[in-house]
Structures are given as C-alpha cells and as structure tokens.
Length: 198
Image (cartoon, rainbow, N blue to C red; front, top):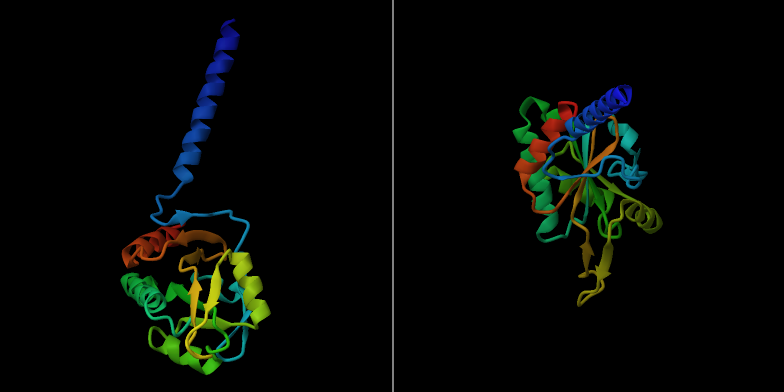
C-alpha cells in the first residue's frame, strides 16, 4: 500500500512537472499563436523583377506576409506603414524583418506598379504577384478571402480581401496570425519574442 502511494506521488509530481514545462513553453504573444497550423506553409509567386520567390528565399529572417492591392484606399497602406514602423522600432534587429506583400489584383498590379508601391514604404519589402490561378491557389492555402467588386467602369473596380498578416520565424515556420488594426507595438513585441527564441 505504501509502495502504491509512493508510485502515485511520483506520478503526480512527474505530471505536474510536465504540465509546468508545457506552460513554460507558451510564449506570451499578443497576436494569435498558430504555431503548428497545417496551412499557409509556403508560396511560389513572382517578384517585381520577375524572379520566382518562396519562403525559403527569406530563411534567417522573420517574415510578415500580407495580402492586398496597390489601389486599396486605407487598410493596405496602413498595414505597410505600420510594418515600416515595426522595422524602425526593432532598431538593430530591423534588418531581420522581411515584409512580403502579395497582390490580390495582379491585373492592375504590374511588376512596375508593385516596385513603385513598395518604394513608398520600404524598398526592402517584397511585392509578389501570380497568375489568377496561382493567386487562387495561394489564397486558398492561406485561407484568405478576396473578391472583385465591380465599379462604374471596367478599371474602377475595387477588391475586398482578408486583411490579417501571417508571421513566420527565422526557420520559415508559421507562428502568428496578426489581426488588422493591432498596431505596430503589438507586432514589435511579438517579433522580439521570436527573435529571442520563443
């Protein structure tokens, strides 16, 4: 009976230790922790110079992926301005941040347009585009919604789209889902945790 009590005590202590260890591994991110998610694992699109790009190209950097379009009136430029501010707040670690903008409007967002658009925010950020089929497949993999909304003329349409960002660690693993409007302080906080090994 005493031996059984000792065994139970050892088992409870081991379980408590394991639970404590699990709890210790959970970093206090302010964004949504989606570590281990089985979607948004990669992309294969073309940059404004016509070069094929994938997550592998940015290994060693924290990658923030955002879907949008250059004629977006508010959400897209705001997200890119905030990402530029995050890079500034990271100080010496700012060069470890890679912004990736994927257009949901490849018809109007030509390579030249995308290159000029990125230059307005940070020339180190990369803008990607694909064929309509490639965009559809990529958006589906990321669980991103986008839809063309017709305007008064053939070229005055707009695009509705998901506005969250996806964050990858320096090993190329999907880690965080950042809600639109979270602000640069939230992302800066979380990226510092990732740089610290969280």
